[in-house]
Image (cartoon, rainbow, N blue to C red; front, side, top):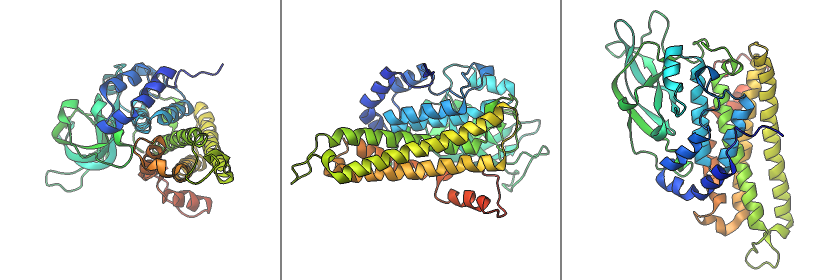
Length: 385
């Protein structure tokens, strides 16, 4: 029997589906929903075993994201954010990593783009101020981080002697103010609101700089590219949403008779063709993800770094799965017909959630260009891989 301990239990899955309207209305995950997910370890799949985490494989983490997203898109998005942010546990100095991730109830999140500013303090540490958007899950995070750029006392670009320039820093929870800005069409329950800090003091070393910081804990996961896993996490949410959309459409089609028709929606040839094509798209998209991640995992288990080609394929699989699954949900929305105009319809919720997920920078349409340039042998900046 295959291991399913990384997936939500039947009870948790049923609870997420039952509470979907509450989650969307609250524009964040309700406390009891967070507690149920936390108790099943859904936010900690990739936390290093060195700090008490399960340290599951890359594929297992992505499977858990997709499974939760099929039950509720916003909940799946929050799992994705928690898992990808916890990858910093392999990079942070052990003292800080233990303090942040050693608590079994720990959940982290934050926005990595350098929207804030930091001034280096004499003797070490940083003084940080800033405002970040897209703070997914911050209402239930025990520690929140944000990307910053170093500046001098006059606000001009600067760097420290050790080369630190664009760190992703972890704040004390009390230093963070959450703003009420998350009023959106999809993934409403993810609580991806803006947040601010003002003159927060960050102790020396409580940060990572993606692309520069070497792992403190050397494990297969620590050899995976952070941006690649983030993109794959978004793709996994999209796959889960498309799976749920298909499930709901099949259930709807068996009993719905379009106005003026004697046949059910399921008995229509166009429905049969579209459902078959949609299933093929979702299955093949996920197979591409699993294939590329599995190949990369084999490499990292040997202790070897990933090649540029492996990194390219990770990003291509993520972008393509997101785009194709988003299109599937659009087609399912159209197939459902007028009933899908109602907010109570899970198919239109899936459609809205998938559209918002597809706008993430890591899987945006332009990232096809990156994969294409490399395939064509053109000189290409690969830092985003």
